[in-house]
Image (cartoon, rainbow, N blue to C red; front, top):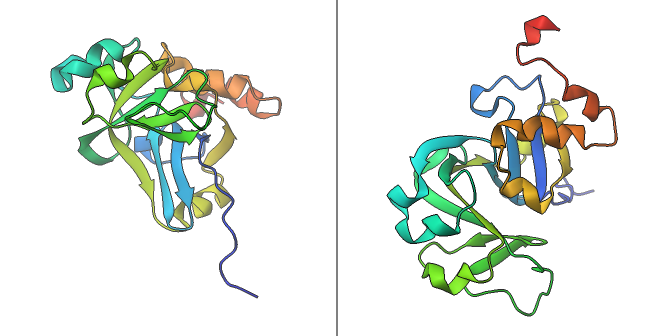
Length: 193
């Protein structure tokens, strides 16, 4: 019997912070997993807008980002590096991914921010720029899932570019067809429960 169980990949899924999650970095966070395998996991927090305009750090990309046109804090790791996550409508056709875009899951993919923005401008449905990311070492995320820190739910392409990121945590929970929809009604201050 092998000690390493096959990790079924959660790439493309959302991690939604449970009210039990104590880490303030991830309070009510909605994380899109961009990579998940036995070597660890990487994702970006979708609901942490910063006051920084995209145009202030990546001029050419600013007009391609949706509202709000700010940089999002993707997580506590590598805050000085930028990640572009874009949805390509009809990104389902495997043979023709636009140059400068690498599929992560379905229509969601990573943008090469070194590429000229014009390469992607016509193909992009939505683009969001993240400073930093959330990372987990091998088995770390699995441990947190066992501890009940996260709900794992399906992502929808619109989650990446939600125009009201402050409502995303509740919206994602509310659309679940399970008892999770009830969690969306939790007051912001758990002591009120």
